[in-house]
Amino acid sequence: MNHQAYLGLGSNIGDKAENLAAAVEGLRARPGIRITARSGDYRTPPWGDTDQDWFLNAAIGIETDLSPHDLLEACLATEATLGRVRERRWGPRVIDIDVLSYAGAEVSDERLVLPHRYVRERAFVLVPLAEIAPDLVIGGETVAEALAKLDATGIDRV
Image (tube, rainbow, N blue to C red; front, top):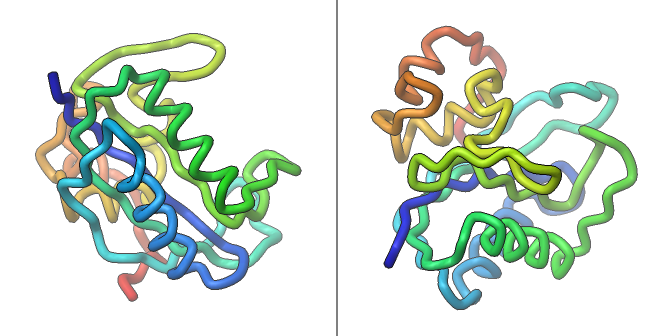
C-alpha cells in the first residue's frame, strides 16, 4: 500500500542546488520511494542559528510503501551518503532531509515526530511545500493557511 508523504530539503554548504538535486536522486534510487512532486528551489535566510550562510530549500512529495520510521532511515542514509555531519543544532549542513508529513499519521517518539514539530512555524519549509501541496492539512490547517500567518520576507525562488 502506498502512502503520500512530504519531505523538506535544505542545504547551505557547497553547491547548494547540486546538493538538493543529489538528495532527490538519492531518494529516487531507494526502494519503496517514488517522487510525485518537486518544488522549485528557494533561497532562504538561516533560521535558529543565524550566524551561517543562506540556505537553499525545496520540498518533494513522494509515494512510499515504507513505514514512517523506515522512511526516516532512508532520509538519514541519503544524508550520510551525501556527507552530512551533525556538528551543531540548526548549524550549517551539506544536506538536510526532514519528513514533514506522512499520510496524516501522528507519531511521537525519540526518533520521529509527525507531523514535523516545526513545520507550521517555518516559512522556509512552508513556501516550497505550498508550491506542491497548498491544500495539505497539517495540524488542523492547510499549508497555505499556515503560511499566510508567517512572514516570508527574504524567501525567494531561484
